[in-house]
Length: 481
Image (tube, rainbow, N blue to C red):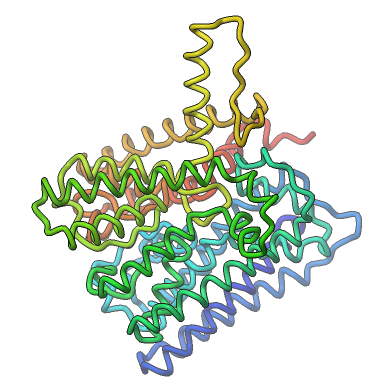
């Protein structure tokens, strides 16, 4: 048991430290939550320290099977402790709502059960932003930076959280070096966009919160109208942070350090990501102008910012998309399912897998015409192993079945058809906002209790790309070897 519990210590301490930082706005704004936020942080940190003090042996190790359970348990435990500030301050109505909001933040989903976000205490607003900033990068990465000294197989933990579709380009970079590089880029980009937003006229409070939630492609806001009330310049800056958050972080590191030779392994994926963003944005802008009758300037701004939010599964909203032309709304569902690049903070299936799927379909059609020819799926000019192509097909099928079951279960709970479809896409893809009452500037507050728990499960499945969680339900998983 200690092999499973000890790895939870580091992320719990990290989560507790993040909670402790939320006492700053509690003091500055005098919102009356100082004691409760401090108590939440203390409980979380002490629990994490106690887990780290569990005895261990040098021979202890965690195999790939246990790593799947550990990673899933890690997100659940972090979400449970993340409920403490909400419960102690009585900012939400029930434990279900607190867990939903906490898990939504940590999974960078952005779905909320708070109808009036602006009514929350300042400390809770920062805590929501903190959960997304931590979750967007993946708290598991913080563990990977320290687990070598704990006798844990770091590669098992990494592959358990991310079903790698982007491993066609081999790398000799050590796991610790990769984590340090990626964290470095994440921190630099966070500071950069805070500064840019400050220069655009935002307050420090706004700049910090909005940067945390948009660079992580999470989408929480400190205002009930999301980012609609900000100036066009500020919205464009936020859209840029979303776009950057959707790019593979290894590619960003190699770009900023001028390691051009390593960038070529990501060019196919980046090219497809860029083409998808440009083509989708052009369609939405034209549709808003000619069908929605918006002036060019407004159509351009709303189209660019909202499409960027959808493609990167951020969930920030500039307008009530429920009122937009129906083809745009359903295009957004498809785009959120695709997501950004593998190795980024985005949700969804990832454009790498979509690209492999498209090329596999193309090659299948070619083989029909030329049955004796050999047409492997290629990325960056190199053949993709058949095992990876098969895994991509499996992931698409698992996503489809998961979403179909989600739709069925939510409708059985009494949720309307429109809200059901939007909620399933919003939770599984980590986009957040759905359709109808839970779309646009709406929330999931009116969902039945059971429906909120179903949505929470869908958020967890989407964050861990389904397979990591579903593998726990295989009968053979629990059998002793």
